[in-house]
Image (cartoon, rainbow, N blue to C red; front, side, top):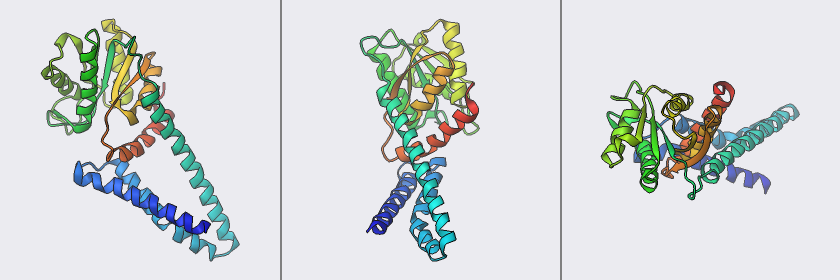
Length: 256
């Protein structure tokens, strides 16, 4: 009975991994590092029951490898689950107090297609726009440099988007040199200091990105609050998978 349940679990995880790695390609045209990771997870769980059966037939020594593999897999699942829990808590448990909202909004950059914000960046900008509309005293720092496949810096595209939505130019501060999240915060903190803006900030980015954002906010002496954008549910698993790798990399190599 336990083996049957185990097989069902593995095949279910495999099917979900394949679904969330492949379907977004046809719906949104998105296939990235997270999609590749999900594909690997799907392949692993698809063949895992057969691997266990094969090793069991090879005697006691191979059975030890099965135990080691299961322990490794369990530890990995626990770590991933813990990180995802932290990411969800940061996005939805570290919001701002509406009675005393931060006056500085930081919008983290994302891909620009030509000169137009991508779907993900548009959703971040919409979250910032709603906040700036609700709190007229708030100002905004838009942060993002120019990638090789982008016609203009992300910060410039973000500024133009907010201007077209009716946000006054004097409320927007532009940062266009950063190439990653660490630099987003490093250069934006410089602008915040130079312009005398409040260091208590609300960060407009996707929910999966908020945990890593909070790490760099702390490194730069900023008081962090989350303003999560609405990530399409079909894209969320792939982006959470990619962000797991991003969090580990940032924790090991990017912290100051």
